[in-house]
Length: 410
Image 1 (cartoon, helix red, strand yellow):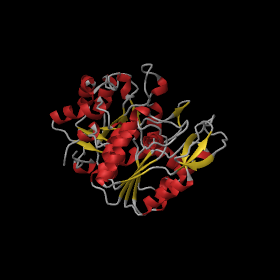
Image 2 (cartoon, one colour):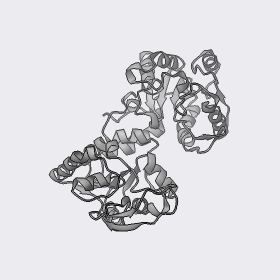
Image 3 (cartoon, helix red, strand yellow):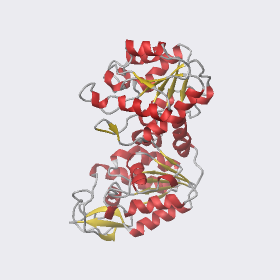
Image 4 (cartoon, helix red, strand yellow):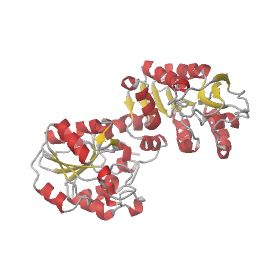
């Protein structure tokens, strides 16, 4: 995959109508935004285009929009908050059609440096379909509003949606530029290059519940990294594949042969594959998830039949932390245990702490690991925390992301 893409620094936007696909999929409660991380992440690109004298047309999806267009999933609160953060009016186009007459007229009336925000792209319904059915007409209408296009929505870059990837062909057809924004560029620089061109030793840490979710990631990373560390619920399928008793622990019996193959592959390639050597166990999963729970620690090959593993043990935490110390690049995706529970967060905290204390480039691959690092207070110690869970996983799999692929090469 070519990762050398045109960015907002590579074209002159003065007087041009620039459509920017952002990720404003923010959590809302009673019409109020409860976490502004994604809005803040979009500001550098928007400010750059305003400073260049572009006419900035912003678009994004919000929520799943399962019940059709509705005010609860309108982007109106985002427009209001953006206006405050940018110190200038962001004109909101409330039209559920997104690209209708209201949008066309508003764009026609724009001056250089003006900003408008279109309504939730998923209100069009065709946004979320399969690539071959992606809303061609919608993509064409979006492109008709603009001269150039900037994708800055990494969280959506793995989807070939109308406003993410399909729009680019209509921009190209009219001689416009398709570029990536600063946020996308940062993701490409960190995540893309970590996998394609890492500074070694390169250590990858995978956790989370299911092996099935990370099949291709494990396979791809074994070829790229020097050490692969496995924790979380998926570790128990690996332990069972080695013939260990895992009690009532989470297991994916259909993937036992796959785990055996990966253990053999690591050996053949001369890669270190680290699995838990001890485990924190309990009689059952905590209910509620953050409620008090009685635990004990046993060796990973000695989990009693009536118990289940819910976190890595202290010896494993030390083993994993040691592996991180000598690394130059570390990618981490997925917690080591049920980190939402204070008693079962120790493994995840130990790994986060090891990453925080290393001089290596540390990259957190979105989703639950990003939530864990934020929640545990280590966020400011990481080199990069990805804004996309699904997108970062596909990057780690070595897949071409439609939103990255569609941008013009330099």
